[in-house]
Amino acid sequence: MCFGVVGTQQSYGFHSLCPGVDSNATIRVLMSCVTNLLFSGFTLLLWAQEEIAIEAIKHAVKALRKRHLLEEGAHGPAFMALTRPFASQGSEWKEKAENLELELQQCYKAQARLSEQLVVEVAESRASKALAVEKEAGLIETQNELTRARDECSHLAALLEENTKGLDLLISENKDLKEQLEEMKQRANSAEAENRMLVDRWMLQKMQDAERLNEANALYEDMLDQLKASSITQHARQQVDGVVRRSEEGAEYYVESTVPDTCKHKIPAHEGGCAAIIFENNSDKIVSGGQDQAVKIWDANTGSLSRTLYGCLGSVLDLTITYDNRSVIAASSSNNLYVWDAISGRVRHTLTGHIDKVCAVDVSKFSSRHVVSAAYDRTIKVWDLNKGYCINTIIFHSNCNALCVSMDGLTICSGHVDGNLRMWDIQTGKLVSEVAAHSLAVTSLSLSRNGNVILTSGRDNLHNLFDMRSLEVCGTLRASGNRVASNWSRSSISADDNYVAAGSADGSVSIWSISKANIVSTLKEHTSSVLCCSWSGLGKPLATSDRNGVICTWT
Image (cartoon, rainbow, N blue to C red; front, side):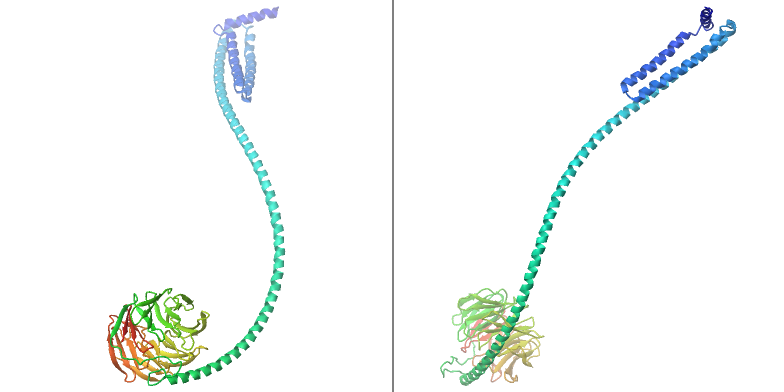
């Protein structure tokens, strides 16, 4: 009971000493603060549902307990002061009230700091939540990538298995191919052995054929010697004062050549120039070739065109015709020779083998089978017309401008850029003899009808006559106004071997008498350089061609 009275008095005394301070109000304020803190914490817990709100509530409870202990310690002196006189404790209560107000302010400040900390924690919680959402999305994407990687891995595994099967198949095929290769090698070795045996047998057969061929050649040479002897006898019978008459069976018709002085026909034959004209054997037909790549056959009596031969791919530089008039052969700047059938007009052969322009061609008078050509590749080639290919090649250091084949068909006569006249064996290709014919290039060679004399023309404007047997000069023809026009200007001997015709760069044609060695006629009808002269085998007419492609016939 005493304790109860004392307690009541103490309470009364406390309110009396501190009339301006209501301890219950203070406690209510503190409880209100704590309640607010607890409400804020629970609100944060309900709103954020995170561990941060729970930690804040725990921190507030601890602060409340601490404050309660401090309040108990602060109220202890008040109970003790009840036993003291009220007058002596008035200032003490006042000071205590001020301290309590100061502590209340500090509580407000602490509440503000806690609120700010709570706001920061809430912001951090939101950021953490957003980061967690982002990480969850990244985790889902990573799981999707993992799924795709697993699918790709399974696809690669299937592909690897397929490739492994293919590799096993290739290995088995490779083994089969190796076995086949070994089998083929064995077959090749056996075939090579068989081939060597066949080659040995073939070589033996060739040796036997060579022996038979040598025997045939020996027989052929014997027959050739006999034929040559008979041919010489026949030619000797045909020569009677330069005129050959039909005195025996099998002789040919010839008339004595006359000195031409009148232009019978002037034919515009070719465009760009005509460098080659020749008469058919024992005929009045003229064969011409020019820069327009055409070979034409003309009637010398009427001057009309009889036939045109096509197929040449270059300028025609020289022409020849076989002794039976069946084949026309042209030397061309396209490095080839062209052989036409004179009857059908079709190209019979294209002879290839030269590597530069072919400037000269001739055919054997003894046999229509062998053709000889010269080109600016420093070679002379012998061709077999029946087979259509080259059978011999002669190589020398100087280009050949003109050539002809001897009457017996055994010797090739060639005139060269170095001015020399050379004789070659047609069978072996060996040089038989050589003579310096001109000081400059030889441009033309013309063999006499009897085959004993050869006419050479050169860029030194001389026309020399050589004895075929001794290669001695038997005549030299010159004229002050006669100038050789080109390296392929052709001169000609008449059919009776009495006259020489040669063209000049001024368009004139000079006629020399061989026996008198003087000019007997000068023909002037051409307006440009005369490139070629050809005398008919019948004795007349004379045909000439110039650089404008005009052909003139003279009687």
